[in-house]
Image 1 (cartoon, rainbow, N blue to C red):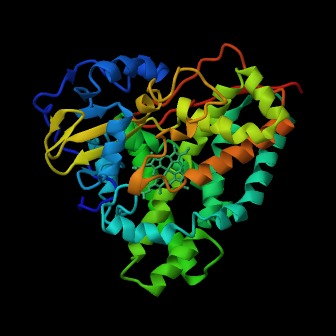
Image 2: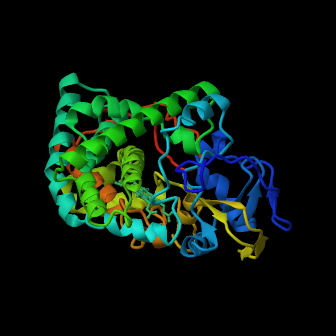
Length: 428
Ligand code: HEM
């Protein structure tokens, strides 16, 4: 793999930095963390806010000021490892991904300056209000069609399978310009990708994901070539026009790689956000009823979900030089795990952090979309989609509720959080 490869494979686990507290028990894959990461992290944030997690081989950062310092100093804390598998990958997957034509390059989240800024400037128009307005009627129509299908089939419904997974996928596919006729195979290729870069898949599972990644990359290449011949009103065509205007400043391979990366970035975190919205809002009946009565409250309800139960509770960096963080000396080459979830639950910033408070004035100060030069490009789109979805659900199904006594399962991984499935019911 080259330095600019999209996914790099880690082969060495550095030892704990001298003087850094070592935690032998912390594991983001453990049941207690999956059930309640905030409870697991709260005592650590108070006592050892920067610690080395033996299981991961990462230095974990839990306080908001330290997380922000990392985000705001990209020269010291490189984002090159954010898409890499957490553990060395199994031989079967390595073999699949060694195909000579599997060569996406790091483009945004995992690309460093000055290239990152050079590439990111071309995405401005794509993520503008204009393109969101173009997408709006599509999202609203599909939201209502998916609700129609749920209603026709009758309660109860698996919300993730029937709504939260398809809608954000289709939205990003339309944004990129993929034809609707390809949705089924695209959905099959793009699911469970989070296990590859952020989970602990077994060999067979990892090989199956690698197969899909390769198939999807090949699809992206053919698709970009077709768009180059026949442009449309979509983000991919915009990028290709920029490439044609200055082929050195935005390379063709970078355009292909942006398309490849956005299908994940724009899909699964939003699926998890929609699941978390219902998990948070439906059991708090007074909040749900308030949103049904006054949909103008929906944006602030979403913002508090993003703080209290974010779909993304961890992210990564690696140090490029020796540094000091939270009073702990950290050598160059140390992988860092940023606990966005712990920072979002810091009591001196968010009083009674474990309480979901619809009227919390500073909910928007959460760190769930990152900060600085890599601040989430899709933050506006994610909030926009969630708003349109909650507007449709509160209007059409005000009696929506969770099926009682269901066990909520979550994907074991270090970054993303949300229900694998969520059974919902309503008064038919
Ligand atoms: C609720 C949903 C989402 C969450 C919580 C989320 C969170 C994040 C976070 C934490 C980062 C890294 C920030 C950093 O490293 O400083 C990020 C970066 C990014 N996100 Fe999102 N994201 C979401 C949805 C989306 C969507 C819908 C898209 C695209 C359509 C998207 C595209 C990106 C891209 C391209 C980057 C890299 C930007 C760069 O490096 O310049 N995200 N996101």
